[in-house]
Length: 547
Image (cartoon, rainbow, N blue to C red; front, side):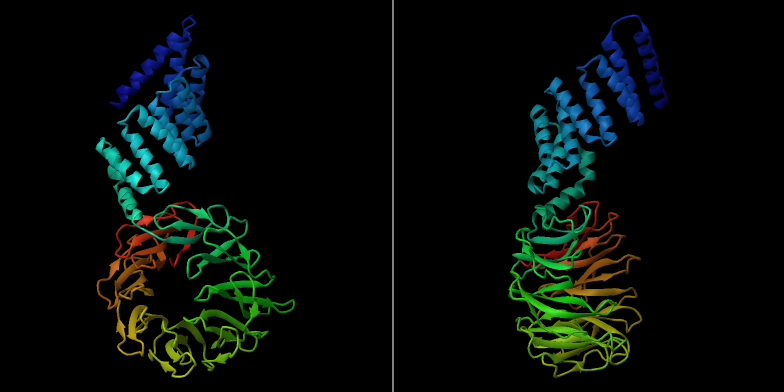
């Protein structure tokens, strides 16, 4: 059959060539010859020669609408979208009722990212041909890019009803994704290099309202929401400063404004202050030290809390009531193994106390939810153990007390249990124990590597990373007692850095399943997976607004 069609086309070419060579002034006949040859070359993928033929056809017949249309298609295939739009516009000047040209120009606007103009053209196509299934489908896609989700779903369904079944089947997952997104609320801040450098963006959880908040030539990273969600603190790394801005990106203030390296901004629980670490250089060598500073969220009231030159003071954690600050101190110059100690001080820097006071390495992990206790990792026993102590350093206890390594303690929201990881079974597993160390249970109990436990906000579930279904990491969830373990992300590529929404209904995470870093959202049971960022650049470090 293809050979017969080829012979017919060749015969047509010969016939048209003979007609063209006859001594006559029939310009339209000659234009048709070039048009048909251009179509054959377009079908073969020879776009440059197709355009040359359409040019000749148009030279011979300046109102040859379909020649403009097909030249526009060839320009599209060569990624010259502006030329394509110009050709489709010319078609519509010649024939304002050409619905197909409106649809094609709409697709070109869609590919340029101008969704409003695309929708306007699809509307015109449908005004001319009300049962134009492809135009409904394309308009639905444009509306989905604008996150006008209800309209998008309606248009996809209409395209299906009109018989566009193949496209509907291939995009059923897209319809399901839109239905899922339409029910989500809240905002997610993240970092992206889609404009050529790292910027802070925010997007609604349903995928609408994407905005570049920082819009600066500098590298802006690590967005941190204020407790009430009204502001965002972030690092601007090329000038090593800490900034704060409103949640819509307005009123950006350089809080630190100092030539030192300022990092790790942490909001106080009431959102009025930010504690951070300032790294200073000593002389012309490589020796450095760091201090802990605090500043009001409007940039006033800067204070050096630790004020201890030549010592490293960093890694700040506010107590839940905001009255105290825990931090880590170590002396690189005089202690080459970096024996870290955990200190606590009042929020104004007074009453600095060494809580651990041991030659082993002690690393702070977290305050209990009520602020009465502190958990930390320690190497004082020759391996990593999880310890707990009262907030004043009394009541020290080794909770895990096992010859293997036990790390990453995470308090349950009600403070009754602690999740942690251990390699006591020969691989990393997730365990849980009571707050006093009793009743230690291996929750995951799998020969793979299970790590990074995160409690759901209500404490009923624990999410974690695992490579049990292959070499790449997946995101799993289980009940707090270890039952009902489910692979949520379920993709052969890497899925990681997951965070729960404040209401516990949704999980945001990073994924490389599209060949780059994207931010996805899914229900806490794994249903309704959706690519939120959907951009060829890198999108990373999702952070939910608290409200």
